[in-house]
Each structure stands twice: as C-alpha cells, then as structure tokens.
Image (tube, rainbow, N blue to C red; front, side, top):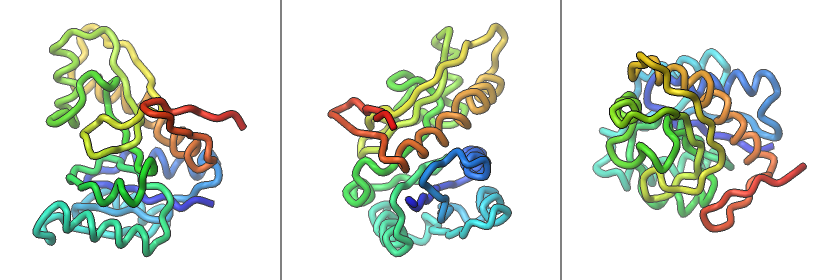
Length: 209
C-alpha cells in the first residue's frame, strides 16, 4: 500500500475529490496518509480532519527561503514514509530537492490543456481568463508529473470540455473542476499506486493490468 501526501494551500476541493474517491475504493493500492498545508488556516486541513487524515502545517513565512521550506517538506515526507506527493492547489514554490528525492513521484493538476495557458502566472482564475480571452473552443485539465520547470513535466492524463457561449472565468472554472479535475486526479493517483505509469522521455505510458 503506497502512502500518499497531499499538499494544499486553500479550500481543498481537489483534496476532497481524492478523499471521496478513496472512500469509494477508487484509489487502488494507495492511502492518503498526510495532508500538508503551507497556510495554517487552509480549509483543506478541516477536510482532512473530518476524514480522519493527519494534517501538518509548514508556513512559508517560517522559512528564510523556498529552498529551506522545501528541505523541511522533504524531511517530513521521508519521516512519514510517503511514496507519492500530490499537489492539490499548493501555491508555494518548491525547489529541486523535492524532485530529486521524489523523481516522477510528484503529481499536479493544472486547469488547462498543457502546454496551453500554462507556466508562470497561470493559476486559479487567471488560467480561465486567458483561455476565454484567446477564444478557444475547448479547455480542460491536465494531470502531470512535476519538474523544476513550471507546468512542464510529463503529462499523465488530460480531459477536455467545451467552452460555452456566455462562459465567464468562474463558470468555466467550475465546469473544468467538476468534469475534469475531480475525475482525472484520483484516476492518475490510483494508476501511480498500482505501478501502472512508466515515463519514457516526455511520454507517460499507462500499463495494462
């Protein structure tokens, strides 16, 4: 059974999707063992508490640099014997030490079809504002492995939705969360925990059972 740590900073809607999927038995050979927040007041910690999952806080302001915070994070993950790290709305910059320790074992969800609307500054509603301003007909979400370069790691899963006439950033965000993010992230984590993901260069192969 692989131990999963979920990194959060805010409300934790994607964390809740993982918790719900776990309760339904959809995360095979994996268990959420820790929720780690960069913000003491994050509602995601309340979600973890309600699900009986241990919560931990590593406030960014307590560390002199991103590297120092990353070192503390890696130390905590190792102490908890974590096998896979999931970034679910984690808004704090981490440095190479995390990816050296957890190579192809850090997973992130991005609310667009990478490589579109990705990279520095593309987070939260900003992503959907950019998509609508560009006039795209479809958008969606991407689950990918995290590397040092922002939103550039190998892609695990993607799912698209139509952009509808009259969409606002808020309505598009909600549709992508409900139809893409909350389905893709548990699926990708389950595949990892089953050892069914193999990275070949930029391509992630999904192995048959």
